Image 1 (cartoon, chains in turn blue, orange):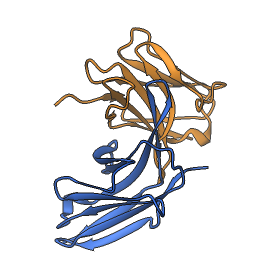
Image 2 (cartoon, rainbow over the protein chains, first blue to last red):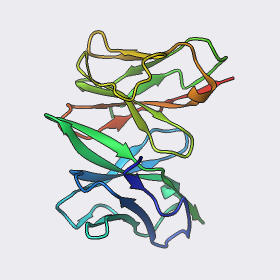
Image 3 (tube, rainbow over the protein chains, first blue to last red):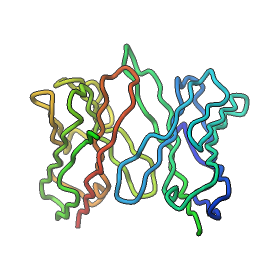
Image 4 (tube, helix red, strand yellow):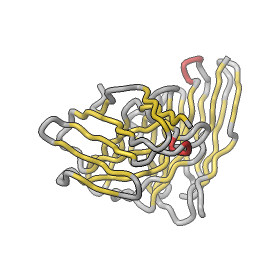
Length: 115
Length: 114
């Protein structure tokens, strides 16, 4: 079965509010965790990643938190904008042998930003 | 900005017919991936190439799916015969190499099998 899953399938927020998207994982051997954004009709787009030995990483308006104790990952988006409306996936990147890495995606959360 | 190109963007085919998808990765990217994405779910890896060699095809249904990357640049994914359950988005991605580099995804081909 899947080793990466999401708590909520949909999230609706008001423009300007902060958004928090959650993800649970079961595989402790992952090397990285990655958040992707997928807009309608497009392929997934890399947002931010975090190495498995880190707790927090910040980017532009986004923060990823990793809680290894409870195997939980979250993506925080500050001052959410209408352009942030999309499906967000968490994925784990794990070494699959030699120098090869494999991505395993979860099911996704649909974020809707209301103006 | 360089992008992964895929064609066609949409394909409707009848079951038992053959269908093919094409992908042109970002120039210089040695690693190419084909994923299948069922509506509402995350992408699932079908096959991974390093240059012209298959690195991982463990999730590719080899009785009906085939993939090739003959010159180590562009790639073709074929389904023959197509089944109703093959309806999905087929995504191509590429990365500089296989060593954990970021994967860049194309826009995908939406396949509908009737």
